[in-house]
Length: 61
Image (cartoon, one colour):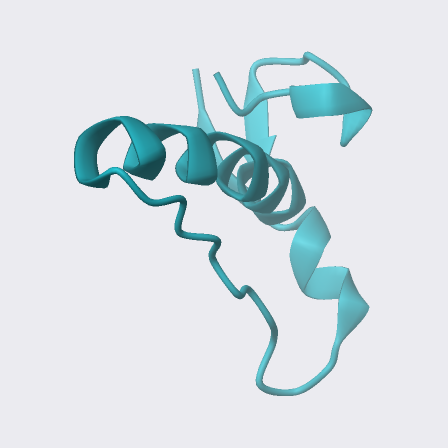
């Protein structure tokens, strides 16, 4: 579901870290609200500040 999520990247069968980050930031509050009764929002950062990390591919379909 994260591939191409909210136009974070193309729907090309690959999931980048940036697409996954976008999916988590949007879907996680909704899911935790359903399960826990309170929305939890993830904080996702890099330890180096390198913005190229968001383009790394996590998985190929």
